[in-house]
Length: 255
Image 1 (cartoon, one colour):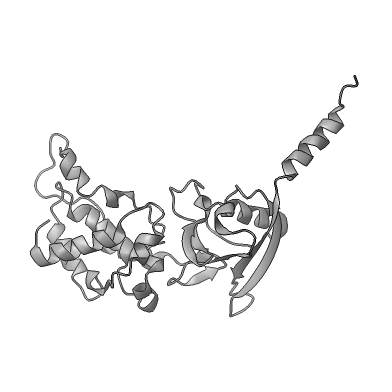
Image 2 (cartoon, helix red, strand yellow; image 1 turned 135 degrees about the horizontal axis):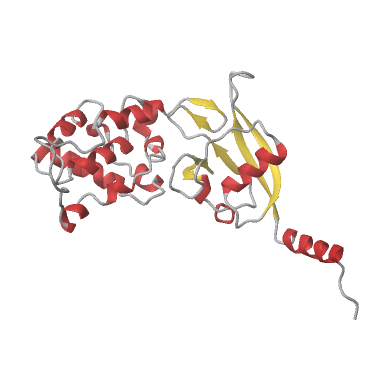
């Protein structure tokens, strides 16, 4: 029996690799301030494995079709939070969204998250978002002398704020909030979540100070409890619940 040649094996492997590819249209909202004042939609049709992620498709478009396509990404594993964008009208992480899960038979729309100024294509100015984060003092604050041993905490005390430690600052929650869309001065869900993480930390001593910051007219009372933020969070944080707990702490001063 004849032995398959290397060329035939290579051809067979290539055919096998391409047999499961499908043709998908990605409709991307492009914006380049150096070219035009308004954004416009542009279609890209590529062949890709439906089990790949939207981030993989964006890479393929940028590397093989149009190198000017601009977006942020870093770890590509849902930890850095840098590739948050609106995919089919919903805030998602491109690195966690499988093509097969978002109906690839129709054009898949990709655009920048809302409420923040678009700098180019899918990249927005994150400075207002991070300024709100900095304003709530997202770090441990204690008084007195530095301890000679670690600050111990019970498992029950740790569990009190465990959920809000999961935030990766992707801005998916804040940029899904209709209040934030209409008024960029609102602190937004992510900043409140990170304040919650320290307000309810038994080792921290600046809870009252953070509560007063969030008692401002642009603080927690702007929340309309639409649950958009909870639905958008890629980490599954109960964002709306955390905001309500901060409101309750402001009223009762118990935390």
